[in-house]
Length: 312
Image (cartoon, rainbow, N blue to C red; front, side, top):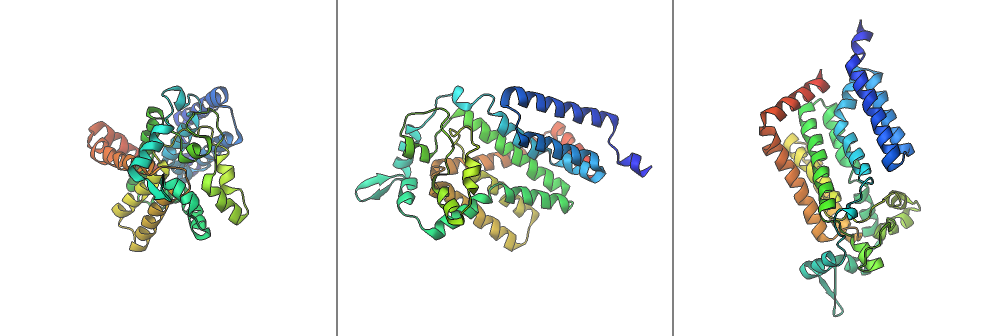
């Protein structure tokens, strides 16, 4: 009887299998199936069928799975096919708002840091940027494992919402990052490969192509606005405050958050404008969920059922 109770229902099995097949089919046709796609499907299916507790985890992780799939599926219809790419205007606005004078020449902050950097700053920058996704996701898993499933769902759904808002920003205003303007000028060249920019110095210092392997997979470099690098730790920091975590955790999150903001500019991957818009994106996601969706009876019903499923 215990074994039977641990098995998913027939409807659950059918739903999961059909969705997995549809995902693989769409990805194969429109994106191109890669090993990581099969890995994602395999992880979800293993978790879903392994047992009751892992099935709850698989369903609880759906906001993160949807985030990853949504990001990947933007390859189907690139943002630069929707709106023109901004290369020059953003650069000029950054210089106007935050320009730094160097020997009689006005530089954007990224150009200034390209001239003024240090080994310590390069190491810290690499460390901060490696934390931008792992730390928020680890925080979410910690909330889940601590059995604070309601707060976990609030965090994970807001994380997804912030990403969707950010992805919409990519399409509304396709924009080149600072390193692009610095290296290629102000003419938009499609299919430009990803670039480690100043983070390449971290790779050289540690002797490993960490960021090179990450950015070489970037198929669209014209997605600088907003900086989701700047957004993620804002969400984690907010819900750490809601959770009333230990002051040491709050402090660590605050340092990581500010460190990622600094690194985004220091590394020439984002303008200060991008960072500010990323922070705004995170705040909008939190506000929209907490003061908007959680006031709608239909959404509250869905949320409560979702919570009940991963707790039952």
